[in-house]
Image (cartoon, rainbow, N blue to C red; front, side, top):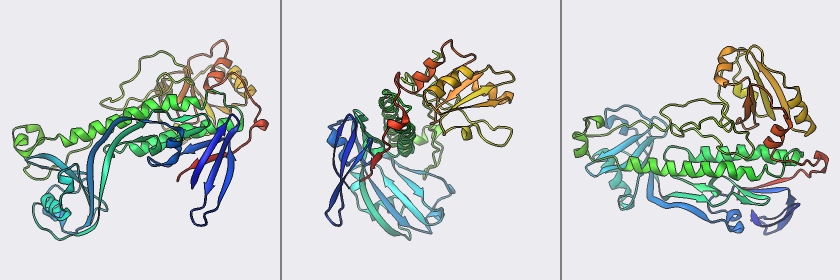
Length: 399
C-alpha cells in the first residue's frame, strides 16, 4: 500500500509498504495518480480540500432473496421500482437477477434507520417469504475536490469526487477521467507532450465533475420529492395506481470540453448540456460522433491510437502541411479519408482532427496558413524534449 510520496521537478518518489510482512520499498515514477477513493491518502497528502453540498442523505441497502416478491404486484419486470405511500417516494427496489435477488434502498433517515424486516413489510404491503442477505447503511455524498492534482501528482475517480449513484454517472465520470488522463500521461512519457498537457486534465475534467455531481444530487432530490399517493390521485400525470409505480429514468446529458486550452475553438454556439435528445456534434471539445462506415466499422473504431485526421466528402482538401507539422513534433497522427456523404454530413466539416480520447481537437474546411499552430495547441506546448530523454515510469495508487 502507499505510505508516502515526495515529488520534485523530475518525478515522484513513492514509498510502498507490504501489509503482510511490514517491509517497504521506494520506487521512482514520472507521475503518481491517486485512484485510492474518498478515504485515500493522495488527496489528503496534497492538502486538497473538498467543495460540494456534503452529505445528501443517509440511506440503507437491504439485499434479500425472494422468489415470491414478483408475484405480489402487477407491474411486470422493470429496472427500477419507486415505492410511494402517503408520505411520498421513500425507496427504490431493484431486481438483481430478474428472478429472486433484490435490493431495497431506503432513501433517508429516520426511515432508513428502521428495522429491516419492517421496511421489507412496508415495501411489500405485508409479510412475504424472503431471506435477508445483508443490510448496509451508507451516506449519499456530494463532494468535488478543489483541485485535481499538484505538479506530478494527480487524482481521479472517487478520490476526486463523490456523488449519489442516482443516474449512474459516478463510474462514468471516473472512467472519463482515466481516459482523459491516460493519453496525456502517455504523451509526456513518449516525449511529444508539452508542459500544458497535464494541467489541461484539471481544466477539462473538473467542470464536468462538478456538473455531474450536482446533477446526481438534483436527480436524487427530484425522485425523493415525488408526491404522496393522495397528491398523485389528483395529478393525472402520475397515473391512478394506488400501489407500486414504475417510473422511467430520463437522464440525457452530453458534455464537451468548453474552453479547453488544448482544443482549437471555432466559436460556434455551445450545445445544451441537458438536451431533450442527444445531438451529435464535431464542435471542438465534443465527442466525435458514431457513424457506420461502408466496411462495417464505426467511426469510433478509428480513434484511440494517437490523433486521427478525418478527410470527409468527395473532394477533401490536402493535409500534407499539418501531417508534416505533427511529424516534426513527434505527435502520432494518421489521416483517414471517408467519402460516404452521410458521414460527411454528420461531421459537419471537411477536416476533423480527433484526439486519442475521441474528443474533437480542431475542425475546418481548409487548413490555416500555419498548421503548426494547431499541433502546438493540441499537444499543449511550444517546446519539445526528444522521447529518448524521457524516463518511462508511471505509478498508480489504488490503495
